[in-house]
Length: 90
Image 1: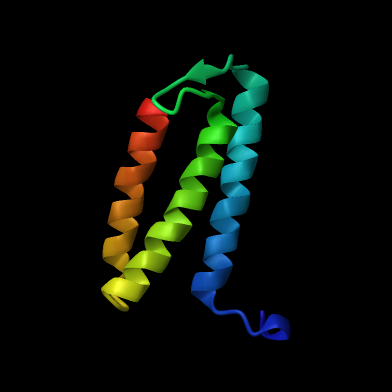
Image 2: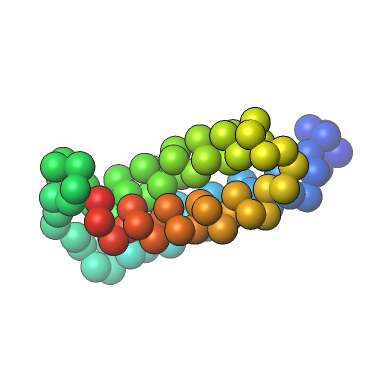
């Protein structure tokens, strides 16, 4: 990891994203899904909801960092609640 000056939290983040993509690809192959319409009134699949979750979580973390400061583990809790809401209602 020294060749890019990465830290373990950064590497863990990208490993988790890669694992999520692999898991969601396997789910799409094993259990094909038809798009559904949620509260946004757009058709979304699991992959779309994952993308919305990742994008929203990035904004939650940036806002948390700007408003609260460096207590990011609490932002993770907010992101998990947000992810559950997206996968349930979007």
